[in-house]
Image (cartoon, rainbow, N blue to C red; front, side):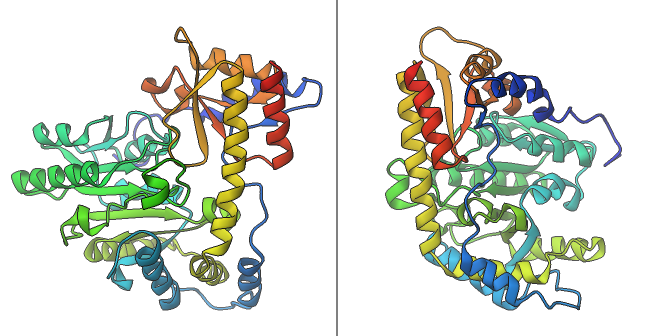
Length: 382
């Protein structure tokens, strides 16, 4: 079983190519709001740190430098309300996507094991389960599923959610953790809860904008016990480091140690200059606040244009996207994609994120100020 078992779905973005060509033919050209890739400059302080560490002839440490892990610990305490994290319970990763894709395999999951993930979700949760030979199961109520299934081994949470910007509060997170622990006690097999929190610094609506987005490692969630809990984070969004592949996982020290041993054997190591750049990024909050304001302006402009054009924005409380549908009668997301392509705007159909999402489209905030202004003007004119 495992990596060669079963067929994977086609890479969804390839299906957008014909629509992109149609949008590109619009006078003034294409405004691509489909892929959430950062477009703003990497902060100079991060580039300087990368350059200063460029003389790196030796192999880096898989566990990450002590400086990096202590920066992650300080960041969790300062920005996420998670004090007292053990530096040994932190592990840098090559971006967060590879960890999402390979966590089921790294945990030893396989045939007969179930991986829960949100019903409206980034497709890599599903793909990662398939790569391991496990069964992916979408659900909006993982606690309820855990109460009556004994084969769940991994629960993926995503808060703030991609694509819909939904946020899980402390009570919701705690309910899932409690249910996972009850299932583990019932079956005698660990149930890991992994929370993908990569958009946590980009909260727009209250109470999250003021209070912050809670982490699965928050002591109000864990009740002081981080056993079988993991938080996954990326610096791609808050620091424009997508090209650096700079991310980390933290939580249960014993679980992180297991992941570390496997990654040592596989050579899954973050380059030393990138580790140094991550320290600079994590230690500085000012550039994150500046980037957040850029996205806030773009979000305001795009939302106003979409609403003037007759669209409704659902959820979207945090993150880099607007979750959009036409006002009135339900419409398949692909129809909305084609409608917006007639204005030269390319967006992603909700069906990329599961059957439950088929009536929406995802509109990314990751375009330049000029491109966003152009998109908003086309929408308002429509």
